[in-house]
Image (cartoon, rainbow, N blue to C red; front, side, top):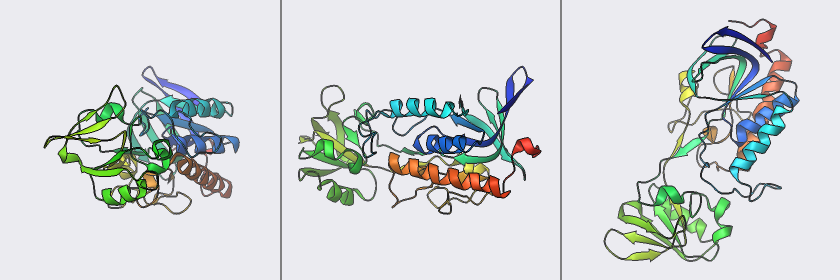
Length: 299
């Protein structure tokens, strides 16, 4: 990877591929690309959907792994192949016919032959007293991720978006003790620390619940794709082909940011998306469809 100081306020970095997002999709893509002898820069703003989650599930050999440990292990592996991770936020992005260019919050500037957007999604959670501190600990969104740990428990499905009744039907695969409660009817959540014991209702009374699953809006973090002119669907998810290629010839997407409902959001699926996109990007370089910036694509 080539770097050169361009001013006292920052450094200019050149790479084959710029990966936006340090979750499972971005890290997997970076590993595959680095092992394919591509120079890779990962820009990670530290914003993760699962940042408060104690552990994720359903990923062979990594079941019950904390997301933080997963990211730390992945970065150590990727850096062995020469990839570089920058902890920063993208403040400006633009593309030319030959490169994708970003300015970062730490003053750095990155120019790459291609970009992979793996920025994920965020949950628009209802404003319920006690919910935020329990998120990922006793309150969840995905029964495939966390249903087993709460099998046969009394569980509440919090209805904050269309589809709550369907979610409740799915949750009953793990426990028959499921009650659906509208978010607007909840005054607070009760339980010691981050544990949950009951739902306090605005109308009075409580509902026993040792865990809860929330059906709430999910918002894709696709602002960069929008700025680059990539096609988005009506919900803001990035539209791609099966390889992750977007409508922009130098931009791919992977992970939840391109997985519009009813596609599932899981760590193992995001990782698979990252690998798929990375292979397609490498093949685009090999075929000449993409050129390395270091080979003269400097504008």
